[in-house]
Image (cartoon, rainbow, N blue to C red; front, side, top):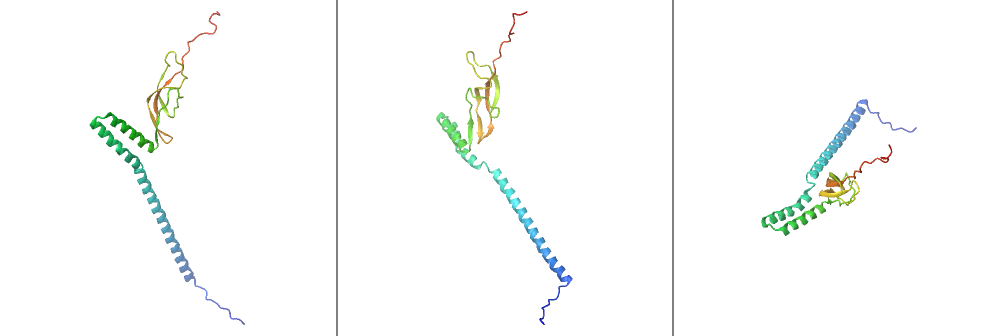
Length: 171
C-alpha cells in the first residue's frame, strides 16, 4: 500500500491569523494607494495654480521693452520713438495671439464682435444697407478667436419711408 502524505490540517486559529495578515497587507496597500492619489491630486492642483498665476509671464516679458521705449520716448519727446513703441507693442500683441478687430465701413454689423454705439442715417446721396458699419469709434481686439473687447461702431439705420396711403384719392 502506498503511504499517502498527509499534511496536518491547519487549525482555525492559524487560518484566522493568515487571513488577518493578508487583510492587514491589503489595508496598508489601499492606504498607500489612497495617499499616493491624494498627493498626486495636491501636486496637480499646485501645478495648475502656479500655471494660472504665471500664465502671462512671457507676454509680460514681451511688454517690458515696450514700456522702456515708451518711457524713453516721453523723456525725449520724440514722435518717432512713440511710433517705434507702437510697432513694438503691436509685435508683442501679435506674438501673444492678440489681433485687432477693425471693421471696415459697409461691413455687416456682428453683435458678437461689434458694439453699436449709435444708429445713424447715411449722409444725403449715400445709400447704406441697414445694420452695416458706418464708422469705427474704437478698435476691438481678439485673443485667438475670443473677443477681448468688441469694436465700438456706429451703424446705418434703415431709412424711414414717408407714410403714404396707396389710394388717397378714393373717398
